[in-house]
Length: 233
Ligand code: TZP
Ligand code: MG
Image (cartoon, rainbow, N blue to C red; front, side):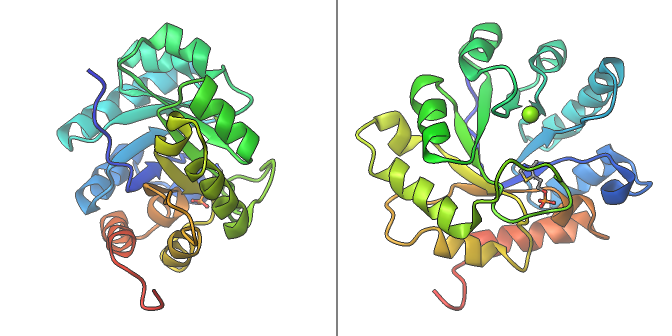
């Protein structure tokens, strides 16, 4: 069976020294889960396949102990090799419908969308389980972002999905990504909601947790900010 996913605090990993420093990724992820992370994506653009599989196996053990699903960025083959809960695919990766044929009905497939067209295609045609919408704000964590959509672009996509005649578009879970941290989270969540029946199911973060001195405290702070109304609501 496909796991029921809590998207509220989605941790996307980064193993580069600029973000992780000299710390151990599994240790940081373990602390983040203790702080309240609900879903983990292993994202590693530089390691070779053997290292990806070895690290994914270790992360999967940590995630299973914390009862949190693990997804793999880009690489359907790595997700199959470690039998984790699914993948996250960008617009330039394998298309979600093909990934579904390889992974079967019970794995989670997330797709990045930065426009209404991409969101429609992923949710309605390709059968994505969730959408990662962004990049919301420019971020050093991902330098070559296709487009920065801002809060207004995010809101436009949510309004479009919420008003769709297509039930998959109306119901697909959504998270946003790009520059989300303790200083921006509540503004993004609150302002993206304006007038839309569809609101974010969660936020995806990299550096706000991975680069934090205390990843557990950082995660717990972000979780609290996501689950409480901002003072300006
Ligand atoms: N996709 C769009 S922005 C981004 C990814 C993977 C990086 C987000 O990093 P941060 O540190 O949370 O801004
Ligand atoms: Mg990708």
